[in-house]
Amino acid sequence: MTDPAKVRRHAERIRELVASVVRSQIKDPRLGMITITDARITADLREATVFYTVLGDATAQASTAAALESAKGMLRSTVGKALGLRHSPSLTFVLDDVQDQVKQIDDLLAQARHADAEVQRLAAQAKYAGDAQPYRVDDEDDEDDEADEVDDEAADTDTDTSSTDRR
Image 1: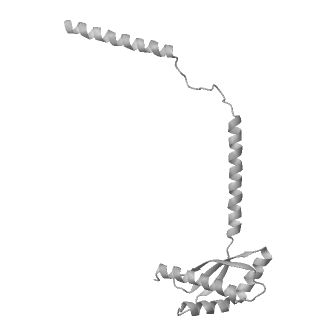
Image 2 (image 1 turned 135 degrees about the horizontal axis):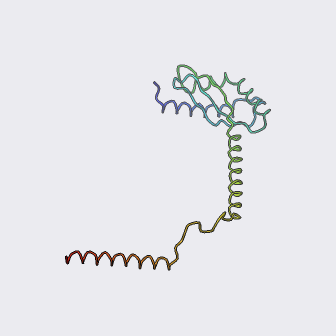
């Protein structure tokens, strides 16, 4: 088993190396405005996946993918020499669609805000279906009457017990 910290270090180093080589050594005109966002490598250090984003439309993305595929051999040899591993990892380039996901999440959040505002607007205009106070509320007079009845019952029980004590 390979140490996970070692794997992370190699993945980070691969990301840095590929970004450096793409910026300085690849002179392919098909290469667009590219950013290397992440790199992942398998535990056996044989295969590396490099994620990238491209500024532009679908044609710019397709031409950049073609340029990276044609430069894959040079990138692999550079990475292999710099890492000093027994086997150079094979490189796979994957278009990272972070911007598309961010846009989708922003659209969903905007829809949720709009729906919340609509619910609040409807709630402000809402009226009760029945009485404003659906629960029975006793008047203060009723409470006083009940308190008098409880006092009377307590007095009756006191007199009953006192009469039984005398017998």
